[in-house]
Image: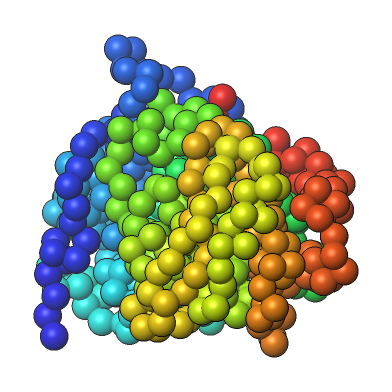
Length: 419
């Protein structure tokens, strides 16, 4: 079947603002006359600089539907048509280059129907296996441009990590084009991954809500986790983005980075409510508001009432009912909770997610963890699960991870690029 990429990848666009190129930490100055409230992505700066970083290189682009320009053209189209760039291959992450696959799946290798370029699947590949893919593709530089959502268990940042590690093994360079963290970047939150719980949803010891951009993470990965064999890394910064900025303030178009993150509001809740993947409750997949509603068949209003009584800052919890079209409880009416974030700056999604887990277990007799203890992979520790089972409250659980979070914050601070 032949698919039009413009139909699958294109969305309406507005504009962003040009940023500065650099591999070293430090704030990126805005260009003269540039509006302070407009963001320009790393790709826009790369283009404005005449693609100097890519001159004479054979480029492979790691991207998905979020890799668009300010006028909603996909980067693959733009780079393929520009004689200054030799784009020879495309690499897709989880959900695929075209974004057609659901969670935990990807698209098969093939050719892009618009450009004829070979498309390779990176999902589930790492180390030498992925290095061999890069070598077979005939590239010498890996360019990464994918919109992240700010949570450790969102797999695109680990696609970046795997690509960096594989590129080092294959002696390829890596260029990371930055995009905003849509939920801001003032602070990190949640438990830091313990090595025993490393997986495809968390390779290394970073906080659950890391509060970083992909370029910042790339710098951290290279120095802290790949130091024994670092990759030749360049980052291309944004301009106009500040750490307190949420996505609505960027002036950029939102393209769903995966099928179940349709809006920036979804991304805001995701770091907390995705924890329900580790339970027998629905995290809202198969509804129009995934991760903003959670629940199960048989749950009643007592859960929402208990969650609201926690008094967590920035969020209200209200009774909700929904019928998933797929995933858990397909076609069945579920009772549960809807999150309404009324103060984004005060809202802590991880604490909210823990609060919902604590109150779900207390108010619904049917509550159960997944038998594979997937919750431990998501939280990065077994202590959250064990403390909830022991009857601990939100603040006690959060206090347990505070020391690790403080240590991560000190490391994180060395790689922040924006004020």
